[in-house]
Length: 297
Image 1 (cartoon, rainbow, N blue to C red):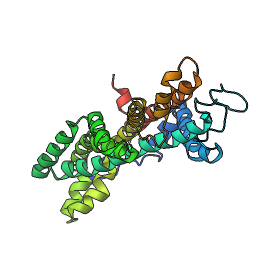
Image 2 (cartoon, one colour):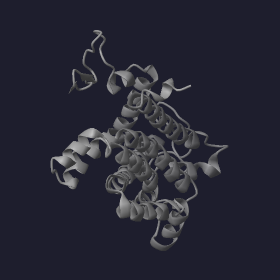
Image 3 (cartoon, rainbow, N blue to C red):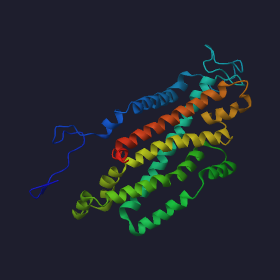
Image 4 (cartoon, one colour):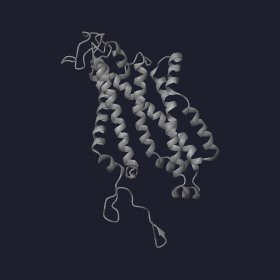
């Protein structure tokens, strides 16, 4: 805003405006949504249980229990066909399933932010070259690549994470490229260039931090998609046989759907709750970080 030929900075989010009304911040908008708080608590509890539960949940491979026991006081989630405590297996499977989701999301976000930020900020030949790289990886079917890698290298969980991350970053990169190109044209970035600051410093200190809002939203969605993808692969038998995940537990339950309903029910509920919570948190973050979108009719 210009007053008598001088520029004044816009009010900072979270401060009191000219009319005495307190400005909205993304944090205020997010925590004003009851569903966002509920699912944030649910996700935090699921993560905490997955991290600490196996410490108290017993041995997931011990066959010292009577097989095919339904849920009871002695076995809250029952036992499987080999006499393994199903609660211990669900807890250990949750730790690995959540690890896959967060690891794939982090790898995708890192690659997408780096490549998309460089393309959007520098433009020109660098942009054209990096866009071609993005298009190449976007054309690779991730699930097919996982199948091929599992056949050649074996179904190792870290190979699955690497392939899912390497094929999942182009979407993040496209979002980052568009945001970085927009931010690079703003006044404070132009001022930094005119002041002689190196492009690398401007990119790291100004462009990338101010382009992260839609990337964060996209990354939260990636967590849920990665968990679903890994669970689907494990359900088909393409997973690490030495490590239990919720998807592999569903695969083990297939022959016993009629006689041991709990073997499919509890891992399925865990997958459903976590993916739903992640998606709801992502929607709330999108509304908080892009508050004008909801006003467009």
